[in-house]
Amino acid sequence: MSLLFSPAIVGGVELKNRIVMSPMCMYSVTAEDGVVTPWHITHYASRAVGQAGLIILEATAVLPEGRISPRDLGIWDDSQVPGLTELVAAIHSSGAKAGIQLGHAGRKTMAADKGVAPSPLPFPDMPVPEELTAEGIAGVIDAFAAAARRAVLAGFDVVELHAAHGYLLSEFLSPLANHRQDHYGGSRENRFALLRQVIEAVKQEKPGALFVRISAEEYAPGGNTREDILYFAREMKASGVDLIDTSTGGVVLADIRYYPGYQVPYAADIRKETGIATGAVGLITTGTQAEEILAAGQSDLIFIGRSFLRDPYWPRTAAVELGHNIQAPAQYERGWHTRA
Image (cartoon, rainbow, N blue to C red; front, side, top):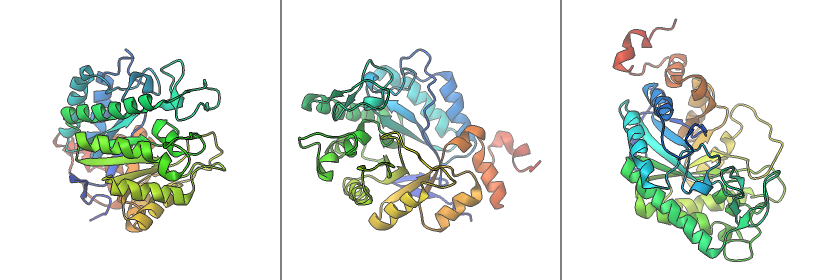
């Protein structure tokens, strides 16, 4: 059996294969109320029909002012739970597991006049953010906890915390964005404090599978070092995180050289050095490439992003490439195994 199509158990959740639809912002809530629309049902359910093992929703805001854009999904209010519940049911109906990425945009929000951040340092061409007070930080932690409670009500199997790409949790981790002088800034231990508290609060509401997406490389002098990232990974593992979704960049503007699998070495390094499960993401486009990553022990799961936008049935495409038969949805059996 292909490793890509072998089952995996992560955080007590059994996945039928190791293919994950990576969270990708869709900016499609036209009413700007954070509520799931028919478009979202179609978009995510079609990838579940395509036989992904796990579908993770786009960054879903824990507070209205924490949206990346006004058209993001939200989970800050109980009125948003019924739509999310319907979406989970649609994903489950095709045998996929459902995950949700909980996020706060911090200084990179376009849904408020200005964002909040660990320090009043703007992202280029954006307003100077407000420095979060102790009370504001407590409110953020409470918002993540409340969002996790709603995720449980909606039936999600996996919660992922968005601590990458220069959004709020990522900002606190990075010395490029965090110049605080209190116990949330300075040392790597202090910069990790907010994420630690969010993890603890979320685990109380949802004790099951918990992933965290991080930026393992910031591509700028003065950013987090490899030793910082490995420290964060070990602390996340000790705090009960089950998998690190290993991305890079986004904290500051940077000149990044993209090539197939360019982020995979970071997932491999974290997995080898800390023993925590990792997900590899970033220009993984073929079944052969994904199989090689798993065979080399570089990650436990394969996160597929843009390839799923081009091909909702990417798992079938990969299976054909690898010479592996996967079960077709009953409705599609007549055409599923035809190469033409």
